[in-house]
Image (cartoon, rainbow, N blue to C red; front, side, top):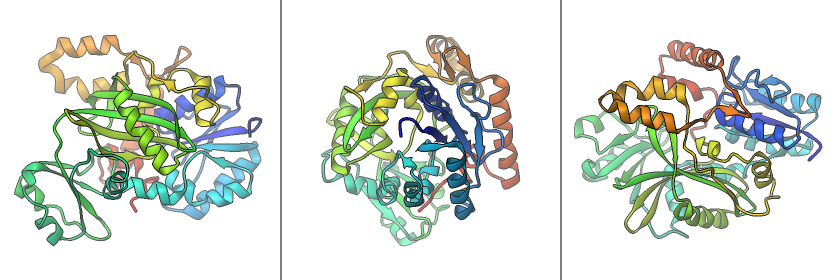
Length: 378
């Protein structure tokens, strides 16, 4: 596969550009792919081209045909997913394998298990002592039996960006949700402490790369936009235990809470997240994904931030601490720069405009619209 071209899917995500840059620096031919017309990765300098495919959520059969045709036409032998298209790719993995294409992701059943916020905690019981009490909710009766909402977090079993999450809600707020077998939720113990996010790469159950950070600023309650590196040792202990227990190969990410007794895992994202931007050795990063890393690939110690998102999402919210906000922004490198080549404001604006148009059309928020056509909800 080393002489074959690489397809990086999820070109709407900055992490896709990071992988494209890494593979290009490692001497590989790279194509970026997505179902959007103008994702942020369209026209990237270190990609040989952009390949558009059908929405996997809305037309899996056509998505399969598109991928197989594109791989054959471009000589692609490796696919690296970055977003929730990984769930759909895993479902067509046998077809890809038959066509001589390697998918860097675990089997679908394992991906589905850890994406379920309740099943993930159940899985962790076999190897980790510090876990939040977590109850699966599939009816109003389950919701009523969950206990005092003042000590709980309620969230859909399948979700992203903290969408619809209720943290220690009032009874009135809780009355607006209605769990069902088709839309299960979890009630999870609220765990006070500092949130730590971990991004990792594993190969056959061994962790080959890790970045641990505190999301100092967020886009609302959702994705981090400022990545403050922290001591990776505590997170590494958990991630290694998880990788060994599952035999994981591919990318994975976790939300963890730092407590006096140890790290408490909250949920797993079995895909790339922004911690990838802290891994700035491109060749070593590719080696980590392909099982060739001579040792653990460690994070860079410099904070990274998406500066445009900081101005859009965090500037107004932090107007009362303006000097501190500006100081934080000044000490962070721009995450969306590789080899001195930034993603231009025009490119970011065009990608945002497409998502905004979709949000208006579907009457959704921006974050929900950003994943509508690729997300997998069980």
